Image (cartoon, rainbow, N blue to C red):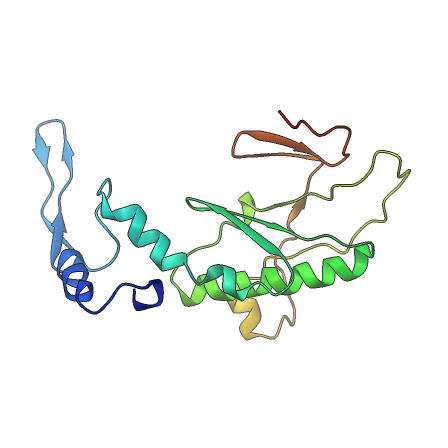
Length: 176
């Protein structure tokens, strides 16, 4: 929290807000036993989104080659280059950094929801097949990627990001 500019006066307040909470579930007219919660923020709380943003604030700092664009819990990284192989190598470094950061910060990266799209001119007849990007598991990192069985990130020709459809071939750009 101090990294985000919040002074030491607010630390005890947030700690107290997040400590010693409990919950129970209601199904119909029946309630479950009360359980203690030792992590996370109350769902639907006003402070929840702010706490999440403070938690992920340092994520963009691990990216060395890509620019980061975040909205809520979505992260979009962008990279541009005239050398596809070199760009893929750099993007893989940043994917590795995001996976490590996620593990270190208790966040699970959903590799199945992660997509790669290469945006290029429609006048380019063919685009070389890039090296696959892989969201390595943390166990794979511990084994120095020896005998890696991690699946590659899916390469797609169209993706919808925050309601905007993006295709791999730049046909036109809407400015209004």
